Length: 267
Image 1 (cartoon, helix red, strand yellow):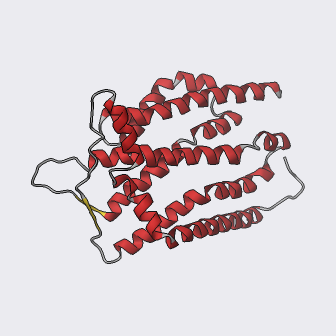
Image 2: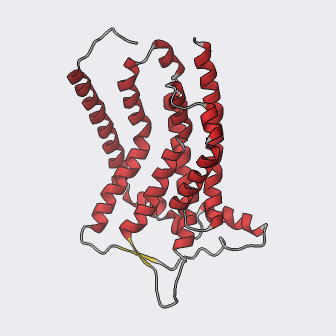
């Protein structure tokens, strides 16, 4: 462990404070970019999945055609999105910009987190964790793309066309719609960090490959529950979401085996 510079508890708090401040500054700078380019943020990104020519609908329509199903080919949504409060649109503009600012600044936020914890690691631990920032960022961005291009369209296609009666017309609140997009994207981004989490839990001995294998069936149930929470309640959507999470769990077992083997070789 690095003893070159002994720090008191208050010194550590001060150091942490500056890491947090720099992270927040990066998020706000990224948010400012999205705030300025309002039309692109909302017309192209936020409301993109409501358009019939959205990329995912074209792909799903072609795939469903192979099974003589056209459930994703008619995506002319009739619902309207409304803002029912005076500050609704302005608040949505600010918080949506911050959300996407956080996504854009995520690698830098991770970098600041790494700078804070790395001095407390042994030299070989720092060496073995060189790819942490790159791999974590890649997994997070893959997860956010999965949430945006898979979970959002599936949810909007199901919930936007669901009806209990022809007398009820769908008019969705702006914050409700943006909340669905935001939760789908961020939840997917963090779920895809599972291999990184397993890597470090194995490093410190809290998780083993045997434990992961033994509890695989419980993990699969948990995956289905997560899929049910972040997707509409139809089986096809839940299976589509569950597949990559199951794959991530299997990859995590392999990673755990590798880490455990390296840990044993060091002793």
